[in-house]
Image 1: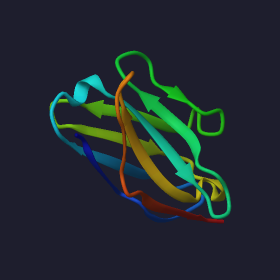
Image 2: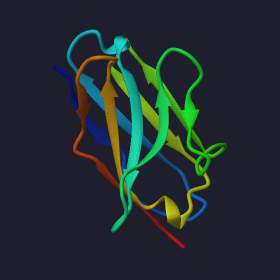
Image 3: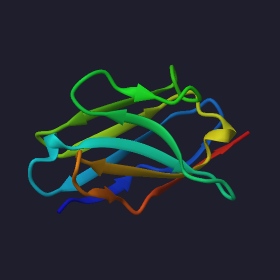
Image 4: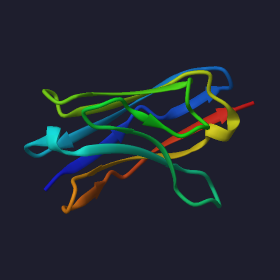
Length: 115
């Protein structure tokens, strides 16, 4: 069982930065792939970034602006978001999953980018 809690969201002007955190409870956190997703009002949830043991993956819309990292010793995953745009507005979720196993979601953190 893994519980995830996101934090770090808020309001920022376009061009600004935010750093989101995803705190995980439970053991063997290093075995889990962790993804970041976001959901804008009236839109479906979309993939943002993913991290496991190799190079992270990013959606084309955030590549070059966002950086995902993790600290397995602290059970933490981070999403550094730079050069934010109004279209980055939404609720950001972290998702931890393991192949042929369960998938866990946090409650989300709101990010609002004003133009």
